[in-house]
Length: 420
Length: 158
Image (cartoon, rainbow over the protein chains, first blue to last red):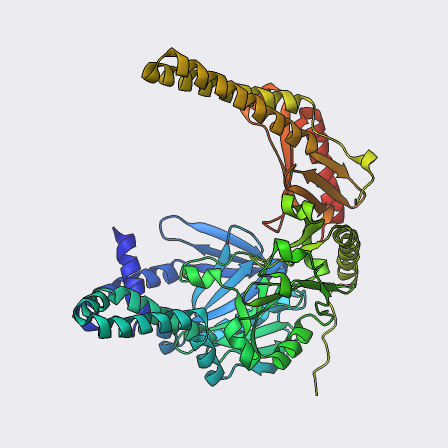
Protein backbone atom coordinates (compact mmCIF):
# COMPACT_ATOMS: atom_id res chain seq x y z
CA UNK A 1 0.00 0.00 0.00
CA UNK A 2 2.69 2.42 1.00
CA UNK A 3 5.12 1.49 -1.71
CA UNK A 4 3.04 2.62 -4.70
CA UNK A 5 2.11 5.75 -2.82
CA UNK A 6 5.77 6.44 -2.33
CA UNK A 7 6.41 5.96 -6.02
CA UNK A 8 3.73 8.46 -6.84
CA UNK A 9 5.27 10.82 -4.36
CA UNK A 10 8.76 10.43 -5.79
CA UNK A 11 7.48 10.97 -9.28
CA UNK A 12 5.52 14.03 -8.29
CA UNK A 13 8.50 15.60 -6.67
CA UNK A 14 11.20 14.58 -9.10
CA UNK A 15 9.24 15.91 -12.04
CA UNK A 16 8.43 19.11 -10.25
CA UNK A 17 8.09 21.22 -13.36
CA UNK A 18 5.96 18.70 -15.23
CA UNK A 19 3.01 17.81 -13.06
CA UNK A 20 1.01 20.88 -13.91
CA UNK A 21 -2.70 21.17 -13.36
CA UNK A 22 -4.98 20.46 -10.44
CA UNK A 23 -4.29 16.71 -10.33
CA UNK A 24 -0.56 17.20 -10.10
CA UNK A 25 -0.90 19.75 -7.35
CA UNK A 26 -3.11 17.52 -5.26
CA UNK A 27 -0.77 14.54 -5.65
CA UNK A 28 2.14 16.68 -4.65
CA UNK A 29 0.38 18.16 -1.66
CA UNK A 30 -0.50 14.71 -0.36
CA UNK A 31 2.82 13.15 -1.24
CA UNK A 32 5.22 15.72 0.10
CA UNK A 33 4.60 15.12 3.81
CA UNK A 34 4.80 11.36 3.30
CA UNK A 35 8.10 11.59 1.48
CA UNK A 36 9.45 13.97 4.06
CA UNK A 37 8.32 11.65 6.83
CA UNK A 38 10.11 8.69 5.25
CA UNK A 39 13.23 10.72 4.65
CA UNK A 40 13.26 11.93 8.24
CA UNK A 41 12.79 8.39 9.59
CA UNK A 42 15.55 7.08 7.37
CA UNK A 43 17.82 9.89 8.52
CA UNK A 44 16.82 9.38 12.14
CA UNK A 45 17.72 5.69 12.28
CA UNK A 46 20.98 5.92 10.35
CA UNK A 47 24.26 5.98 12.21
CA UNK A 48 27.71 5.82 10.72
CA UNK A 49 31.32 6.01 11.79
CA UNK A 50 34.79 5.39 10.43
CA UNK A 51 36.38 2.28 11.92
CA UNK A 52 40.03 2.00 11.01
CA UNK A 53 40.01 1.74 7.26
CA UNK A 54 36.34 0.96 6.89
CA UNK A 55 33.11 2.88 7.02
CA UNK A 56 30.29 1.32 9.02
CA UNK A 57 26.71 2.34 8.37
CA UNK A 58 23.87 1.12 10.54
CA UNK A 59 20.43 1.82 9.27
CA UNK A 60 16.82 0.66 9.14
CA UNK A 61 13.83 1.26 11.37
CA UNK A 62 12.22 -2.16 11.40
CA UNK A 63 14.88 -4.27 9.76
CA UNK A 64 18.18 -3.06 11.09
CA UNK A 65 21.16 -3.57 8.86
CA UNK A 66 24.78 -2.94 9.55
CA UNK A 67 27.02 -2.44 6.54
CA UNK A 68 30.77 -2.30 6.52
CA UNK A 69 32.58 -0.80 3.55
CA UNK A 70 36.35 -1.42 3.27
CA UNK A 71 37.57 1.91 1.99
CA UNK A 72 40.47 0.55 0.00
CA UNK A 73 37.93 -1.05 -2.32
CA UNK A 74 35.86 2.02 -3.08
CA UNK A 75 35.30 2.45 -6.79
CA UNK A 76 33.79 5.92 -6.68
CA UNK A 77 32.24 8.42 -4.29
CA UNK A 78 29.31 10.58 -5.33
CA UNK A 79 27.79 13.61 -3.71
CA UNK A 80 24.20 13.85 -4.86
CA UNK A 81 22.06 16.90 -4.19
CA UNK A 82 18.44 16.81 -5.34
CA UNK A 83 16.64 20.13 -5.62
CA UNK A 84 15.07 19.94 -2.18
CA UNK A 85 18.37 19.03 -0.56
CA UNK A 86 20.01 22.01 -2.21
CA UNK A 87 17.38 24.34 -0.83
CA UNK A 88 18.05 22.96 2.63
CA UNK A 89 21.84 22.95 2.21
CA UNK A 90 22.11 19.18 2.43
CA UNK A 91 23.93 16.52 0.44
CA UNK A 92 23.92 12.77 0.10
CA UNK A 93 27.07 10.68 -0.12
CA UNK A 94 27.13 7.47 -2.11
CA UNK A 95 29.97 4.99 -2.04
CA UNK A 96 30.22 2.73 -5.02
CA UNK A 97 31.82 -0.62 -4.33
CA UNK A 98 33.01 -3.27 -6.75
CA UNK A 99 30.39 -5.89 -5.90
CA UNK A 100 27.97 -7.02 -8.57
CA UNK A 101 24.94 -7.01 -6.29
CA UNK A 102 24.93 -3.25 -6.15
CA UNK A 103 25.55 -2.90 -2.43
CA UNK A 104 26.06 0.77 -2.12
CA UNK A 105 26.84 2.88 0.90
CA UNK A 106 24.40 5.71 1.14
CA UNK A 107 24.54 8.53 3.66
CA UNK A 108 21.51 10.79 3.34
CA UNK A 109 21.59 13.54 4.36
CA UNK A 110 24.60 15.40 5.64
CA UNK A 111 25.13 19.12 5.72
CA UNK A 112 27.16 20.18 2.71
CA UNK A 113 30.44 21.18 4.43
CA UNK A 114 30.28 17.99 6.47
CA UNK A 115 29.71 15.90 3.36
CA UNK A 116 32.71 17.50 1.67
CA UNK A 117 35.00 16.88 4.61
CA UNK A 118 33.82 13.32 4.95
CA UNK A 119 34.40 12.68 1.27
CA UNK A 120 37.94 14.01 1.57
CA UNK A 121 38.55 11.78 4.58
CA UNK A 122 37.14 8.69 2.90
CA UNK A 123 39.24 9.31 -0.19
CA UNK A 124 42.35 9.81 1.91
CA UNK A 125 41.68 6.49 3.63
CA UNK A 126 40.94 4.86 0.30
CA UNK A 127 44.42 5.86 -0.86
CA UNK A 128 45.95 4.69 2.38
CA UNK A 129 47.13 8.08 3.62
CA UNK A 130 46.34 9.65 7.02
CA UNK A 131 42.75 10.72 7.48
CA UNK A 132 43.49 14.38 8.27
CA UNK A 133 45.50 15.00 5.10
CA UNK A 134 44.27 18.16 3.45
CA UNK A 135 42.47 17.38 0.19
CA UNK A 136 44.81 17.93 -2.75
CA UNK A 137 44.18 20.98 -4.91
CA UNK A 138 42.19 20.29 -8.02
CA UNK A 139 42.60 21.59 -11.47
CA UNK A 140 39.75 21.97 -13.91
CA UNK A 141 40.35 20.07 -17.12
CA UNK A 142 37.25 20.74 -19.15
CA UNK A 143 33.72 21.88 -18.89
CA UNK A 144 30.95 21.32 -21.35
CA UNK A 145 29.50 24.25 -23.29
CA UNK A 146 25.78 24.74 -22.82
CA UNK A 147 25.04 25.72 -26.41
CA UNK A 148 26.83 22.61 -27.62
CA UNK A 149 25.02 20.45 -25.10
CA UNK A 150 21.63 21.71 -26.25
CA UNK A 151 22.57 21.21 -29.89
CA UNK A 152 23.87 17.73 -29.20
CA UNK A 153 20.68 16.69 -27.42
CA UNK A 154 18.65 18.02 -30.33
CA UNK A 155 20.81 15.95 -32.69
CA UNK A 156 20.64 12.80 -30.57
CA UNK A 157 18.34 9.85 -31.13
CA UNK A 158 15.89 11.53 -28.79
CA UNK A 159 15.86 14.68 -30.88
CA UNK A 160 15.37 12.72 -34.08
CA UNK A 161 12.43 10.83 -32.59
CA UNK A 162 10.89 14.11 -31.51
CA UNK A 163 11.32 15.69 -34.91
CA UNK A 164 9.79 12.65 -36.62
CA UNK A 165 6.84 12.69 -34.23
CA UNK A 166 6.37 16.43 -34.68
CA UNK A 167 6.49 16.09 -38.44
CA UNK A 168 3.99 13.26 -38.25
CA UNK A 169 1.71 15.39 -36.08
CA UNK A 170 1.90 18.36 -38.44
CA UNK A 171 1.27 16.23 -41.52
CA UNK A 172 -1.69 14.47 -39.94
CA UNK A 173 -3.08 17.81 -38.75
CA UNK A 174 -3.06 19.02 -42.34
CA UNK A 175 -4.41 15.80 -43.83
CA UNK A 176 -7.01 14.82 -41.26
CA UNK A 177 -7.35 17.46 -38.55
CA UNK A 178 -10.17 15.84 -36.61
CA UNK A 179 -8.43 12.47 -36.17
CA UNK A 180 -5.09 14.09 -35.44
CA UNK A 181 -6.37 16.25 -32.61
CA UNK A 182 -7.74 13.18 -30.90
CA UNK A 183 -4.52 11.23 -31.33
CA UNK A 184 -2.33 14.07 -30.10
CA UNK A 185 -4.62 14.71 -27.18
CA UNK A 186 -4.53 11.02 -26.31
CA UNK A 187 -0.74 10.79 -26.42
CA UNK A 188 -0.26 13.17 -23.53
CA UNK A 189 1.82 10.68 -21.54
CA UNK A 190 4.12 10.05 -24.49
CA UNK A 191 4.74 13.78 -24.85
CA UNK A 192 5.38 13.99 -21.13
CA UNK A 193 7.82 11.12 -21.43
CA UNK A 194 9.74 12.89 -24.17
CA UNK A 195 9.92 16.10 -22.21
CA UNK A 196 11.11 14.18 -19.15
CA UNK A 197 13.81 12.44 -21.18
CA UNK A 198 15.00 15.76 -22.57
CA UNK A 199 15.01 17.28 -19.15
CA UNK A 200 16.91 14.38 -17.62
CA UNK A 201 19.68 14.57 -20.19
CA UNK A 202 19.96 18.31 -19.86
CA UNK A 203 19.91 18.18 -16.09
CA UNK A 204 22.45 15.40 -15.72
CA UNK A 205 24.97 16.81 -18.19
CA UNK A 206 24.41 20.51 -17.69
CA UNK A 207 27.59 22.38 -16.91
CA UNK A 208 29.56 19.18 -16.49
CA UNK A 209 33.02 20.02 -15.27
CA UNK A 210 35.88 17.57 -15.14
CA UNK A 211 38.61 18.36 -12.67
CA UNK A 212 41.68 16.41 -11.75
CA UNK A 213 43.00 16.29 -8.23
CA UNK A 214 45.64 14.16 -6.57
CA UNK A 215 42.99 11.79 -5.28
CA UNK A 216 41.16 11.23 -8.51
CA UNK A 217 38.93 12.61 -11.16
CA UNK A 218 36.09 14.91 -10.09
CA UNK A 219 32.96 15.27 -12.15
CA UNK A 220 30.44 17.95 -11.31
CA UNK A 221 27.21 18.57 -13.12
CA UNK A 222 23.54 19.38 -12.85
CA UNK A 223 21.10 22.18 -13.33
CA UNK A 224 18.50 21.64 -10.61
CA UNK A 225 19.68 18.39 -9.06
CA UNK A 226 23.44 18.43 -8.87
CA UNK A 227 25.80 15.52 -8.55
CA UNK A 228 29.52 15.47 -7.90
CA UNK A 229 31.35 12.25 -8.47
CA UNK A 230 34.89 11.35 -7.55
CA UNK A 231 36.56 8.47 -9.31
CA UNK A 232 39.76 7.57 -7.45
CA UNK A 233 42.85 7.20 -9.57
CA UNK A 234 43.33 3.84 -11.20
CA UNK A 235 39.65 2.91 -10.96
CA UNK A 236 38.77 3.51 -14.57
CA UNK A 237 38.01 0.11 -16.09
CA UNK A 238 37.38 1.29 -19.62
CA UNK A 239 36.90 4.46 -21.64
CA UNK A 240 34.51 4.71 -24.53
CA UNK A 241 34.16 7.37 -27.19
CA UNK A 242 30.99 7.55 -29.26
CA UNK A 243 30.63 9.52 -32.47
CA UNK A 244 26.98 9.47 -33.57
CA UNK A 245 26.21 9.89 -37.24
CA UNK A 246 24.50 13.26 -36.82
CA UNK A 247 27.33 14.71 -34.76
CA UNK A 248 30.01 13.85 -37.26
CA UNK A 249 29.60 16.95 -39.47
CA UNK A 250 30.43 19.03 -36.39
CA UNK A 251 33.29 16.79 -35.29
CA UNK A 252 31.68 16.11 -31.94
CA UNK A 253 31.97 13.08 -29.76
CA UNK A 254 30.99 11.82 -26.34
CA UNK A 255 33.47 10.29 -23.90
CA UNK A 256 32.31 7.91 -21.17
CA UNK A 257 34.15 6.09 -18.43
CA UNK A 258 33.20 2.80 -16.89
CA UNK A 259 33.96 1.92 -13.29
CA UNK A 260 33.35 -1.37 -11.55
CA UNK A 261 30.21 -2.08 -9.60
CA UNK A 262 26.65 -1.88 -10.63
CA UNK A 263 25.04 1.44 -10.08
CA UNK A 264 21.53 0.61 -9.06
CA UNK A 265 19.86 2.00 -6.03
CA UNK A 266 16.94 3.95 -4.78
CA UNK A 267 16.74 7.45 -6.13
CA UNK A 268 18.32 6.39 -9.39
CA UNK A 269 15.96 5.52 -12.16
CA UNK A 270 16.47 2.87 -14.76
CA UNK A 271 17.74 4.97 -17.58
CA UNK A 272 20.24 6.60 -15.28
CA UNK A 273 21.72 3.33 -14.13
CA UNK A 274 21.79 2.03 -17.67
CA UNK A 275 23.81 4.90 -18.97
CA UNK A 276 27.47 5.27 -18.38
CA UNK A 277 28.98 8.29 -16.77
CA UNK A 278 29.94 10.77 -19.43
CA UNK A 279 33.08 12.73 -18.68
CA UNK A 280 32.49 14.70 -21.83
CA UNK A 281 28.81 14.74 -22.91
CA UNK A 282 29.75 16.51 -26.10
CA UNK A 283 33.05 17.92 -27.22
CA UNK A 284 35.46 18.28 -30.07
CA UNK A 285 37.94 15.60 -30.99
CA UNK A 286 40.79 17.66 -29.63
CA UNK A 287 39.09 17.90 -26.24
CA UNK A 288 38.36 14.20 -26.26
CA UNK A 289 41.92 13.32 -27.16
CA UNK A 290 43.27 15.54 -24.45
CA UNK A 291 40.93 14.10 -21.84
CA UNK A 292 41.78 10.59 -22.95
CA UNK A 293 45.45 11.39 -22.48
CA UNK A 294 44.72 12.33 -18.89
CA UNK A 295 42.63 9.23 -18.25
CA UNK A 296 44.87 6.71 -19.98
CA UNK A 297 48.32 8.20 -20.55
CA UNK A 298 49.35 5.54 -23.03
CA UNK A 299 46.18 5.21 -25.10
CA UNK A 300 46.84 3.90 -28.61
CA UNK A 301 44.73 4.64 -31.64
CA UNK A 302 43.00 1.94 -33.63
CA UNK A 303 45.10 1.60 -36.73
CA UNK A 304 44.83 -2.01 -37.88
CA UNK A 305 41.66 -2.43 -39.96
CA UNK A 306 39.79 -5.70 -40.25
CA UNK A 307 40.55 -7.93 -43.26
CA UNK A 308 38.40 -7.08 -46.31
CA UNK A 309 36.52 -10.37 -46.16
CA UNK A 310 35.05 -9.28 -42.83
CA UNK A 311 32.71 -7.23 -45.00
CA UNK A 312 30.65 -10.36 -45.70
CA UNK A 313 30.23 -11.03 -42.01
CA UNK A 314 29.59 -7.46 -40.84
CA UNK A 315 28.57 -5.36 -43.85
CA UNK A 316 27.39 -2.37 -41.82
CA UNK A 317 30.15 -2.42 -39.26
CA UNK A 318 33.03 -3.22 -41.54
CA UNK A 319 34.17 0.34 -42.25
CA UNK A 320 34.62 1.04 -38.52
CA UNK A 321 36.30 -2.21 -37.50
CA UNK A 322 39.87 -1.64 -36.33
CA UNK A 323 42.05 -2.17 -33.33
CA UNK A 324 45.38 -1.20 -31.88
CA UNK A 325 47.43 -1.79 -28.78
CA UNK A 326 50.43 -0.75 -26.76
CA UNK A 327 52.07 -2.47 -23.81
CA UNK A 328 49.48 -1.14 -21.39
CA UNK A 329 46.31 -0.47 -23.31
CA UNK A 330 44.20 -1.89 -26.11
CA UNK A 331 41.65 -0.15 -28.28
CA UNK A 332 38.95 -1.42 -30.61
CA UNK A 333 36.45 0.42 -32.76
CA UNK A 334 33.10 -0.78 -33.95
CA UNK A 335 29.58 0.47 -34.55
CA UNK A 336 27.13 0.61 -37.40
CA UNK A 337 25.95 4.22 -37.65
CA UNK A 338 27.80 5.65 -34.69
CA UNK A 339 31.47 4.90 -34.33
CA UNK A 340 32.26 3.49 -30.89
CA UNK A 341 35.85 3.36 -29.74
CA UNK A 342 36.66 1.47 -26.53
CA UNK A 343 39.94 1.64 -24.67
CA UNK A 344 40.76 -0.96 -22.06
CA UNK A 345 43.85 -0.73 -19.85
CA UNK A 346 45.46 -4.15 -20.09
CA UNK A 347 45.94 -4.29 -16.34
CA UNK A 348 42.16 -4.19 -15.94
CA UNK A 349 41.32 -7.14 -18.16
CA UNK A 350 39.44 -9.80 -16.23
CA UNK A 351 39.40 -12.48 -18.88
CA UNK A 352 39.87 -12.91 -22.60
CA UNK A 353 37.62 -14.87 -24.89
CA UNK A 354 38.03 -16.03 -28.43
CA UNK A 355 34.71 -16.71 -30.15
CA UNK A 356 34.22 -18.06 -33.62
CA UNK A 357 30.85 -18.66 -35.23
CA UNK A 358 30.15 -20.85 -38.27
CA UNK A 359 30.22 -17.96 -40.74
CA UNK A 360 33.42 -16.65 -39.22
CA UNK A 361 35.00 -20.10 -39.56
CA UNK A 362 34.07 -20.13 -43.23
CA UNK A 363 35.74 -16.74 -43.71
CA UNK A 364 38.69 -17.59 -41.43
CA UNK A 365 37.76 -14.87 -38.97
CA UNK A 366 37.55 -14.81 -35.18
CA UNK A 367 36.53 -12.36 -32.50
CA UNK A 368 38.47 -11.63 -29.33
CA UNK A 369 36.58 -10.18 -26.37
CA UNK A 370 38.43 -8.37 -23.61
CA UNK A 371 36.20 -8.54 -20.53
CA UNK A 372 36.46 -5.89 -17.86
CA UNK A 373 34.81 -5.42 -14.49
CA UNK A 374 32.92 -2.44 -15.83
CA UNK A 375 29.23 -2.66 -16.38
CA UNK A 376 29.07 -2.62 -20.12
CA UNK A 377 32.21 -1.61 -21.87
CA UNK A 378 34.73 -4.20 -22.87
CA UNK A 379 36.73 -3.95 -26.03
CA UNK A 380 35.94 -6.55 -28.65
CA UNK A 381 38.24 -7.15 -31.57
CA UNK A 382 35.52 -8.13 -33.99
CA UNK A 383 36.14 -10.28 -37.03
CA UNK A 384 39.90 -10.46 -37.15
CA UNK A 385 41.90 -12.85 -39.26
CA UNK A 386 42.24 -16.17 -37.40
CA UNK A 387 46.03 -16.08 -37.19
CA UNK A 388 46.01 -12.47 -36.10
CA UNK A 389 43.34 -13.23 -33.48
CA UNK A 390 45.32 -16.15 -32.06
CA UNK A 391 48.48 -14.09 -31.94
CA UNK A 392 46.58 -11.20 -30.31
CA UNK A 393 45.07 -13.55 -27.74
CA UNK A 394 48.47 -14.86 -26.76
CA UNK A 395 50.14 -11.47 -26.68
CA UNK A 396 47.36 -9.66 -24.85
CA UNK A 397 47.31 -12.43 -22.24
CA UNK A 398 51.03 -11.93 -21.66
CA UNK A 399 50.82 -8.14 -21.68
CA UNK A 400 47.86 -7.99 -19.33
CA UNK A 401 49.69 -10.25 -16.92
CA UNK A 402 52.73 -8.00 -17.05
CA UNK A 403 50.54 -4.89 -16.62
CA UNK A 404 48.88 -6.45 -13.58
CA UNK A 405 52.25 -7.22 -12.03
CA UNK A 406 53.76 -3.75 -12.52
CA UNK A 407 50.65 -2.14 -11.14
CA UNK A 408 50.85 -4.26 -8.00
CA UNK A 409 54.56 -3.77 -7.55
CA UNK A 410 54.46 -0.05 -8.26
CA UNK A 411 51.68 0.71 -5.78
CA UNK A 412 50.01 4.04 -6.32
CA UNK A 413 51.10 5.65 -9.58
CA UNK A 414 52.69 9.08 -9.56
CA UNK A 415 50.46 12.08 -10.09
CA UNK A 416 51.04 13.38 -13.61
CA UNK A 417 52.28 16.96 -13.86
CA UNK A 418 49.79 19.67 -14.67
CA UNK A 419 49.67 20.85 -18.28
CA UNK A 420 50.82 24.34 -19.13
CA UNK B 1 46.49 -22.23 -30.64
CA UNK B 2 47.50 -20.87 -27.31
CA UNK B 3 48.46 -24.13 -25.69
CA UNK B 4 49.84 -27.35 -27.12
CA UNK B 5 47.16 -29.96 -27.54
CA UNK B 6 48.73 -32.45 -25.17
CA UNK B 7 47.99 -30.32 -22.12
CA UNK B 8 44.24 -30.27 -22.63
CA UNK B 9 42.08 -32.24 -20.24
CA UNK B 10 38.53 -33.29 -20.96
CA UNK B 11 35.45 -33.82 -18.83
CA UNK B 12 34.82 -37.31 -17.55
CA UNK B 13 33.61 -39.90 -20.11
CA UNK B 14 30.65 -40.37 -17.80
CA UNK B 15 29.40 -36.94 -18.91
CA UNK B 16 28.70 -38.52 -22.28
CA UNK B 17 26.57 -41.22 -20.66
CA UNK B 18 24.82 -38.55 -18.61
CA UNK B 19 24.02 -36.47 -21.65
CA UNK B 20 22.96 -39.55 -23.60
CA UNK B 21 20.63 -40.55 -20.76
CA UNK B 22 19.15 -37.06 -20.65
CA UNK B 23 18.51 -37.01 -24.39
CA UNK B 24 17.10 -40.56 -24.27
CA UNK B 25 14.67 -39.77 -21.46
CA UNK B 26 13.50 -36.63 -23.18
CA UNK B 27 13.07 -38.40 -26.52
CA UNK B 28 11.22 -41.25 -24.84
CA UNK B 29 8.79 -38.92 -23.11
CA UNK B 30 8.13 -37.05 -26.35
CA UNK B 31 7.72 -40.36 -28.20
CA UNK B 32 5.25 -41.80 -25.69
CA UNK B 33 3.17 -38.66 -25.12
CA UNK B 34 3.25 -37.55 -28.76
CA UNK B 35 2.62 -41.07 -29.96
CA UNK B 36 -0.35 -41.58 -27.67
CA UNK B 37 -1.87 -38.20 -28.53
CA UNK B 38 -1.42 -38.73 -32.26
CA UNK B 39 -2.62 -42.32 -31.88
CA UNK B 40 -5.87 -41.28 -30.20
CA UNK B 41 -6.42 -38.39 -32.59
CA UNK B 42 -5.53 -39.91 -35.96
CA UNK B 43 -5.33 -43.65 -35.38
CA UNK B 44 -2.49 -46.10 -34.65
CA UNK B 45 -0.57 -45.52 -37.90
CA UNK B 46 0.22 -41.81 -37.41
CA UNK B 47 0.74 -42.49 -33.68
CA UNK B 48 3.50 -44.98 -34.38
CA UNK B 49 4.94 -42.60 -36.97
CA UNK B 50 5.19 -39.77 -34.44
CA UNK B 51 6.81 -42.05 -31.89
CA UNK B 52 9.38 -43.31 -34.37
CA UNK B 53 10.10 -39.74 -35.53
CA UNK B 54 10.67 -38.67 -31.93
CA UNK B 55 13.08 -41.55 -31.34
CA UNK B 56 14.96 -40.72 -34.55
CA UNK B 57 15.14 -37.04 -33.57
CA UNK B 58 16.52 -38.13 -30.21
CA UNK B 59 19.19 -40.23 -31.92
CA UNK B 60 20.14 -37.26 -34.09
CA UNK B 61 20.22 -34.90 -31.10
CA UNK B 62 22.44 -37.36 -29.31
CA UNK B 63 25.07 -37.05 -32.04
CA UNK B 64 25.16 -33.26 -31.63
CA UNK B 65 25.25 -33.49 -27.87
CA UNK B 66 28.08 -36.00 -27.97
CA UNK B 67 30.10 -33.72 -30.20
CA UNK B 68 29.50 -30.84 -27.83
CA UNK B 69 30.69 -32.91 -24.89
CA UNK B 70 33.82 -33.96 -26.78
CA UNK B 71 34.57 -30.32 -27.65
CA UNK B 72 34.73 -29.31 -24.01
CA UNK B 73 38.29 -29.09 -22.69
CA UNK B 74 40.34 -27.20 -20.16
CA UNK B 75 43.98 -26.59 -19.54
CA UNK B 76 45.66 -25.37 -16.36
CA UNK B 77 48.62 -23.22 -17.26
CA UNK B 78 51.08 -21.54 -14.94
CA UNK B 79 49.23 -18.23 -14.82
CA UNK B 80 45.77 -18.82 -16.24
CA UNK B 81 43.11 -21.36 -16.98
CA UNK B 82 41.94 -22.05 -20.50
CA UNK B 83 38.47 -23.40 -21.20
CA UNK B 84 37.48 -24.43 -24.68
CA UNK B 85 33.98 -25.37 -25.76
CA UNK B 86 31.43 -25.31 -28.53
CA UNK B 87 31.09 -27.03 -31.89
CA UNK B 88 29.13 -24.62 -34.04
CA UNK B 89 30.34 -21.55 -32.18
CA UNK B 90 33.72 -22.30 -30.71
CA UNK B 91 34.74 -20.41 -27.61
CA UNK B 92 38.05 -20.22 -25.84
CA UNK B 93 38.24 -18.40 -22.51
CA UNK B 94 41.46 -17.31 -20.85
CA UNK B 95 40.94 -16.58 -17.16
CA UNK B 96 44.00 -15.45 -15.19
CA UNK B 97 44.12 -16.99 -11.71
CA UNK B 98 44.70 -13.56 -10.22
CA UNK B 99 41.36 -12.38 -11.57
CA UNK B 100 39.31 -15.14 -10.02
CA UNK B 101 36.81 -13.83 -7.49
CA UNK B 102 35.46 -17.19 -6.40
CA UNK B 103 35.04 -20.73 -7.58
CA UNK B 104 31.92 -22.79 -7.09
CA UNK B 105 31.20 -26.44 -7.58
CA UNK B 106 27.62 -27.33 -8.46
CA UNK B 107 26.22 -30.84 -8.67
CA UNK B 108 22.52 -31.34 -9.34
CA UNK B 109 20.73 -34.56 -8.36
CA UNK B 110 21.14 -36.18 -11.77
CA UNK B 111 24.78 -35.21 -12.10
CA UNK B 112 25.42 -36.43 -8.57
CA UNK B 113 23.98 -39.84 -9.35
CA UNK B 114 26.64 -40.06 -12.05
CA UNK B 115 29.25 -38.79 -9.59
CA UNK B 116 29.81 -35.63 -11.61
CA UNK B 117 30.02 -31.93 -10.78
CA UNK B 118 30.39 -28.59 -12.58
CA UNK B 119 33.17 -26.20 -11.66
CA UNK B 120 32.59 -22.56 -12.44
CA UNK B 121 35.02 -19.68 -12.06
CA UNK B 122 33.78 -16.16 -11.48
CA UNK B 123 35.67 -12.98 -12.22
CA UNK B 124 34.60 -9.40 -11.65
CA UNK B 125 33.45 -9.26 -15.27
CA UNK B 126 29.98 -10.60 -15.88
CA UNK B 127 30.92 -11.60 -19.42
CA UNK B 128 33.67 -14.06 -18.60
CA UNK B 129 32.37 -17.58 -18.70
CA UNK B 130 34.65 -20.31 -17.50
CA UNK B 131 32.55 -23.33 -16.72
CA UNK B 132 33.64 -26.93 -16.85
CA UNK B 133 30.79 -29.45 -16.57
CA UNK B 134 31.01 -33.16 -15.97
CA UNK B 135 34.09 -33.40 -13.81
CA UNK B 136 34.38 -36.40 -11.53
CA UNK B 137 33.80 -35.38 -7.94
CA UNK B 138 37.42 -35.90 -6.92
CA UNK B 139 38.75 -33.95 -9.90
CA UNK B 140 36.22 -31.17 -9.27
CA UNK B 141 37.35 -30.88 -5.65
CA UNK B 142 41.01 -30.91 -6.66
CA UNK B 143 40.42 -28.24 -9.28
CA UNK B 144 38.45 -26.10 -6.86
CA UNK B 145 41.19 -26.25 -4.21
CA UNK B 146 43.92 -25.71 -6.78
CA UNK B 147 42.16 -22.72 -8.33
CA UNK B 148 41.36 -21.04 -5.04
CA UNK B 149 44.94 -21.55 -3.85
CA UNK B 150 46.34 -20.10 -7.06
CA UNK B 151 43.78 -17.31 -7.03
CA UNK B 152 44.81 -16.34 -3.54
CA UNK B 153 48.51 -16.43 -4.37
CA UNK B 154 48.16 -14.28 -7.46
CA UNK B 155 45.22 -12.10 -6.49
CA UNK B 156 45.18 -8.64 -8.06
CA UNK B 157 42.94 -5.76 -7.10
CA UNK B 158 40.26 -4.51 -9.41
